[in-house]
Length: 490
Image (tube, rainbow, N blue to C red; front, side, top):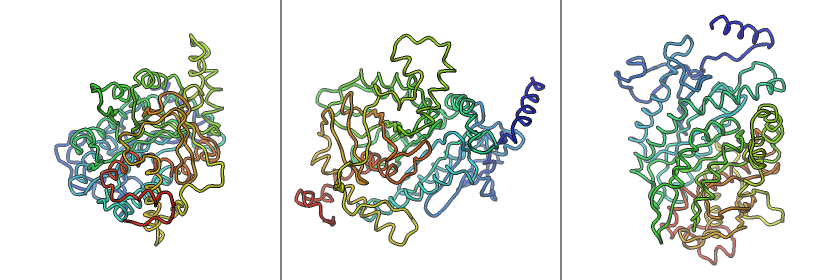
């Protein structure tokens, strides 16, 4: 066995300029508080007081805390004692320990979980790591603006970067595309491994801190959004889809009561997920058959795929043609779903997201804040939140808890995007959204301001708007809404 492994490694080295090392990047721990000496994963060695920034599981800034959790080729934490792995086996335990410490000293936590996709890893110079830092900085800016605009105590922003060996070839990018199917198999193993432990522990932490299901007021100690891109979407979806199906049927539905579907975190977002539609089919069918969504609630699950995404729209089905040639498909639906990703099967699409085609401006004066460090960044973000609040009021009306949407409904968002319901239950909290190149130009273009702003506004349906309903004095009058003038606080 060892000889075969050595031969494979030798072949890899002979055929390619090099393979990316299999060791983790974040081999040292940098905890915010002393870790218990009897911790099960590494005893007294847990605390690392002088971790190197590029090797640490934890990056701390004034704006946010960022943690890394890495999984190996089999979907497990790197083995304790493995040469070159350092303390990587302790990353989940160290993260949960620090979350407890942060929750004890902060007014609240806003946790952002991101699972990267193909061609990425936990290196400090990785493009997704850099984008995630900027996203966390923008989240911090929103927290400051919430304090200014709504009088809410800002939550401490905590990022969790979930990593795996998405980049396995040390070769130029065009040639790296040959790793697509090998990395898909690895992503599947990661989805079936200890990533499930990580997501379950995070959700358990959130539920414990919030005292159970989130109250209608939205005044939670902990908020959490989970996001996955490409094969990271495969990892996240496969790890939690069973729980989402359970939640659709969870609890008795009392006649006349508001029937809310429990959440995994506050929202799960997939961007250009490389997930064959057959994996999504059970959740799709569960949402359709369950029915009974007589009122709107912020979506629990949102998948967004661009028709301009070549990787999931072209490469994926071509590869599936080869890899599924001997598989039996019993219907046209199965044949289509087994070949294509969940965002490229028209019969599964619930909504379409497009740019406005007219010349009207949904939120006059609204503009994305491109530089969070600008002197006026908080004031501009505060203005954006105020405009978004007014725009949401126009959609929700005076009492969002009684809002019932009809088939074909549309909703305009600040940033001049329009969401249109296409098919299936109009109030379902399970969304499979299709967009185009104007919003997501290609597979990796998920950091465009127009796309990020849409995701933020949908997320705020779950974590901000419920609170504002109670604090109705912060809303504008109908006359102000109609005038669409410069918003002013009452």
